[in-house]
Amino acid sequence: SKKQALLRRAIVTVQVKLSNRILTVSEYSKNDICKRFHTPENKVHVTYNAVRSNGTEKMAQPEKYFLFVSETEKAKKDFQKAAELDPQLKK
Image (tube, rainbow, N blue to C red; front, side, top):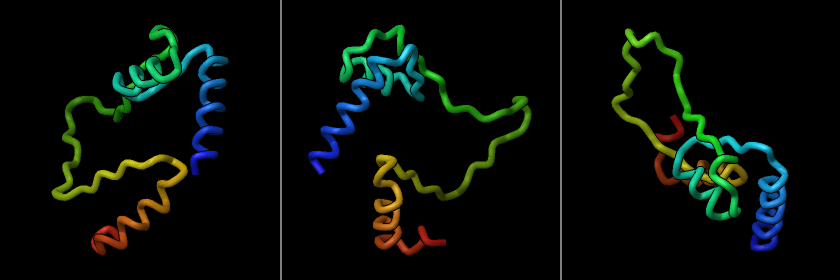
């Protein structure tokens, strides 16, 4: 709801202001955080997702995959809706 969105934004704004450092997973997110919350770039650090590897083994490449992006609060409900639209997601 709009009320929840405003409350969440207020809470995040305070959390960003009080934080010494902020970690995020991409440059895009870093730029978004800096812009939305008027935060100095040196306060936001990118820590890319990684997989441990010694560089010699090949990563498994699935023939088919499903990319799902959602807000944390709505992820379960959104995924259930997506699964209803595509029965193969239930497997």
